[in-house]
Image 1: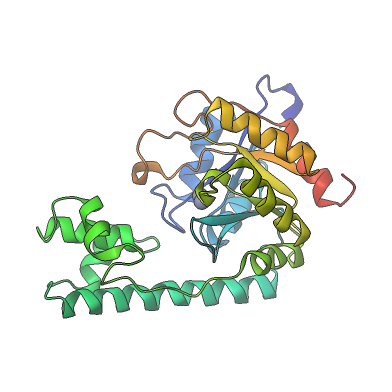
Image 2 (image 1 turned 90 degrees about the horizontal axis):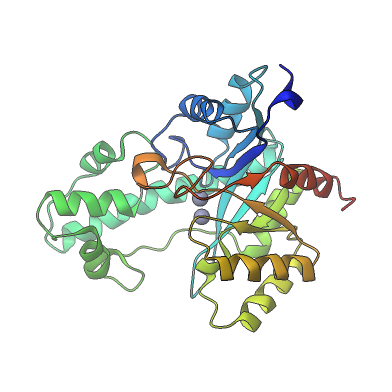
Length: 291
Ligand SMILES: [Zn+2]
Ligand SMILES: [Zn+2]
């Protein structure tokens, strides 16, 4: 298929599939992306490349370009730090070994949380949680949903506030990579590490955010996710400025999760987003180290 003849050249570089906590399979994501005329996408599941690898295998000759991707959670307080990895070798043994370790820790953690809830007098079983997860990755939001179903709490928020939040009585930490380990894992698999949705770091000021970004760059970070549905115009401008100042690539994506995150759609986010293909070209140049 002649890609250059396509009029629109937009992309979505942050999509979750059923391989993690999204509600669409890689194949359904490909179909949707093609229907709305995107030129390239990346499936960036949490701590797994299964969805990404599957998409790359099934999209061959479809005219839709698939970039390999992953989203790794790094150990960070007081906020959430996710490092996206693009153009990784999905078969890299080291990467896969690390991801397996992260997945195993996720699984163990769910069992431990359930054990703690039971000790707190709540009747909840792992299979009930698996059932509401719909077959993908299981995590605290699914446990929260079961707690609501059982009437132990009124809302998901209450489940987190009373039991599941970091200082809550049923909270169990899980094994995470340090920020620099996450970055190195991606670099060693030939990929381009990018800081996802920088606002979730909860930096108190622009100066603090800039210091964190400078630190990550020292560890090998190559890009910032500048375009994101929850980024205001002001925020987006700030991230563009920081990316330029620190010689970082800019990426963008919707963080689409399907039914698991209502109101956010592939390619357009809440309806307004348009991420140009140019960013993919720059990403590829940056990945070769000649940016
Ligand atoms: Zn994220
Ligand atoms: Zn994400």
